[in-house]
Image 1 (cartoon, helix red, strand yellow):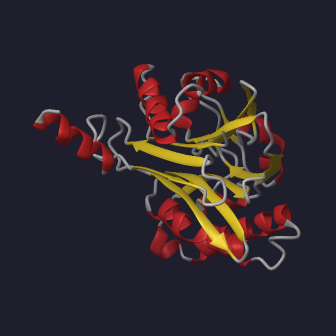
Image 2 (cartoon, rainbow, N blue to C red):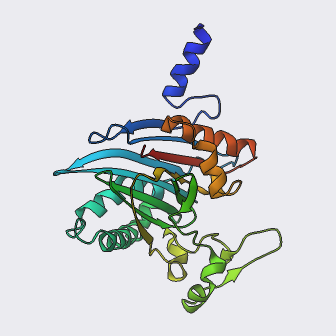
Image 3 (cartoon, rainbow, N blue to C red):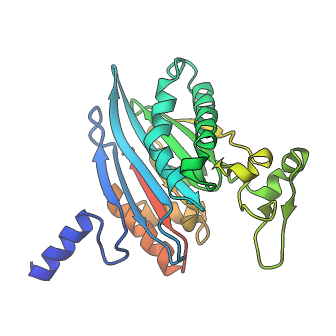
Length: 285
């Protein structure tokens, strides 16, 4: 291997590959089932603002249980809010006393508490906000997905893509937004926006819009069985240029989870996605 190739490999390992100098990359695996692995990769988009995507991905031992904790936070007008979420949201979820007995209820409450904290800290965290998609893998047997906004979670079951999250689009929630006193605009050449500003109907933060904006997550539970191959969590920079099945098909035969995440981003860039892009792939087999 040449010196240049060695340098390229080193750069890739620390997230400094040729695709973007701001890339984050990493991988890990379960301690209870070695074949359950995760990998992630991020790339800054072509916009002028700083990178606003943040990733969380790790396996963690909690008492006698193992949790896989995975998330993507996609900020808007803010780096501070998604960074705060990366540091605090899972802690808040796991602090809930009924996390093990009523997991869905605990996640919903933790999302609300976290949003309240962000709003109270708006002087420090700024006026922006963030979408979120989180996935908690409990003992490699149960996957609990929650989301607000348009970052998405998809599972591959026997080769078929199944969306586990909901894209919270203003048009779909126009009635609820108007009942809160807000409005939805749709100008030619643009996407629907809450109060003419935000292109999602649910998000953390966004203090100036919060009266018209929900932070209630969609939560779903998926049992992991022999048909469950892998899950993809990705920010909207992926979903703007490919559908769920295309994403699943692209990474299905890439066995290394981090390589799969990076390859999916490279495909999105080939399709001219201009947004910040973050991908987490969790392989079950």
